[in-house]
Length: 316
Image (cartoon, rainbow, N blue to C red; front, side):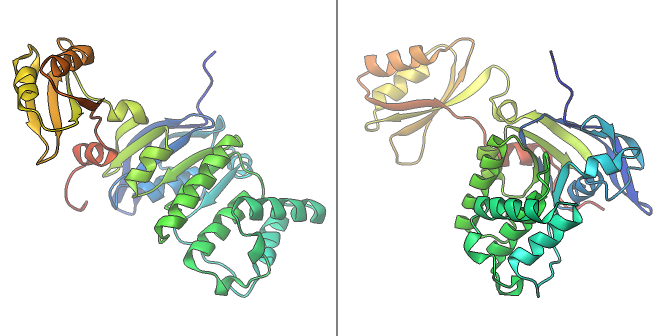
């Protein structure tokens, strides 16, 4: 039996005074997924996230979260979401523990519950040793971890994260990605906006791309990156460059192009998937005397799909 999506956005519209931000954005988010949300600056990502977090009211369209209309049932939605904005103002004179305890109390948790949950979120975000540090003494990376810990104190089912890796060094970003994977294993659904496309490719199973307030793609990451149509490109690496192999591949019916990658023993081979099989290519290489190291389909990167689907320039 097919289940309803956790987030269901249909024809969402919003404008700031006379400047439209969203022109009918549509997408769905399935439960227990990590769903990427990307677009150029000014595309409408933060506006959409604020609407999902019930901080802005949609001016058109329908938005359901947990099957509830966010206009009529916003209080019920708020209890089950955790929103991490791209910039967070913190009480910098507080300690880490005091800050988390304050927000846990605001969610109505009893003191005994608060201590247990704070211990758990500090462990999850690897901040146990910093609980007595003043917030003003924390680095940017530690501040981001604390912001994520704050989002988790009331155990939300859905996390809405706006650029959570902003300003983090490479190690900090890698560690954040591992935390998000662990949260998904714990049953959380994560909707994450980010400009770091290479990391989203490894992290997300679904993705939505918007540009100038319109949906350009929404669906499985795998489908977006898969080769389109009958023509597919393979990357073939040999033990050493081998001219007879090049000639043999070019002679195969259905091979469109064979090009060597600079001075390496690797080749791009463009074929019609309906005519040429990988077994046929391998047989051709071996028959010509070449030694195969690897042969794989060259799927496109998220960066390439993003550039194909979005327009150049700044929205006016």
